[in-house]
Amino acid sequence: MKISICGKGGSGKSTIVTLLARAAQKKGLKVLVVDSDESNSGLFRMLGFEGPPLPLMELLGGKAALKKKMNLPNLFEKTEIRIEDIPSPFIKEKDDLMLISIGKVLQSLEGCACPMGVLSREFLIKLRLNENEIAIVDMEAGIEHFGRGVDEAIDKILISIEPSFESITTAEKIMSLASGMNKKAVAVMNKIPSKKTVKTLAESLKDDLEILGVIPYDPLVFEANLEGFALNKGKAFDEAKKVLEALLRQ
Ligand SMILES: Nc1ncnc2c1ncn2[C@@H]1O[C@H](COP(=O)(O)OP(=O)(O)OP(=O)(O)O)[C@@H](O)[C@H]1O
Ligand SMILES: [Mg+2]
Image 1 (tube, rainbow, N blue to C red):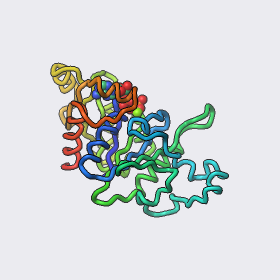
Image 2: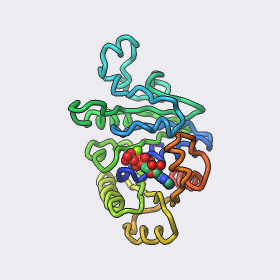
Image 3: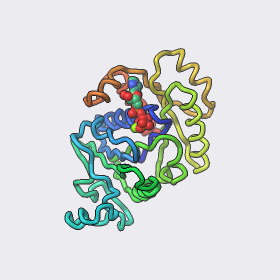
C-alpha cells in the first residue's frame, strides 16, 4: 500500500509520516518512507537516522561524475522498482524502517522543482511492494503535487488538518483535486488542543470528508522534533496507531 500525507505547510505532514511509520514498524511491517518534499530536509532526523540518504535525483545524471565513480545502475530504466533495487547510498535503513529522498532544492536559481515532481511520480508508479511492505510519502506542502501527477500511484491520500482557516481551505482543494483523479482523500486532525476545537473544525469541514483520527497538540511531539528523539510513544503516537489501522482497513 502507498499512502501519501499532504496538507498545508506546517500542518504536521512530516510529524504524521513519522508517527505512522513508527506505528507500521511496530506492527511488523517493512516501512519505506519517501521524502517527496523538495524544501525541508529534517525528516531523516525525525526518523532517527544520523544523516539523509543521497537523493534519487542524483541517479539521473545529477552529478555525473559521482554516478560514474559509484558505478550505479539506472534505477529508472527498470519497469518495476522494488525496495531492494535501491542502491545503499540512496536508502537509509534501520530495523525495517527505510528512508529515501527524491531531491532537494539546494541552490538559488537552480531552476524550478518540477523535475523532482516528475521523478516522484515515476518512482511511485514503478514502485512494487510486497504484502508486508508499506510506503508512506511525505508530500510537499500545498497542492502543486497534484498538478505534477505525483499522487497518481497513491492508494490512500491522507490530509493533515491543523485548526486554521488556511488548513481547511487547502484540505478542501485537496479533496476536490483527489476526486478529479478518482481518488478519495481522508483526513486526520492534528495539533488539536481541546474537544471544542474538534467540534469547531468538524463543523467547518465538508461532511463527506472522512476523519480517521484526532491527534492532540502534544508537547512531546514538539520536543521530539526539536531535539531529535524517536516519536514512538505518547498520546499522538497512540492516535496515529488508530489512523494506521483505519487506513489499512479501507
Ligand atoms: N500534534 C502535534 N503536537 C505538537 N506539535 C506538533 C504536532 N504536530 C506537529 N507539531 C509541530 O508543528 C511543527 C510543524 O510540523 P511538521 O514539520 O510535521 O509540519 P509539515 O506539515 O511537515 O511542515 P512543512 O510543510 O514545513 O513540511 C513542528 O514544529 C512540529 O513539532
Ligand atoms: Mg514537512
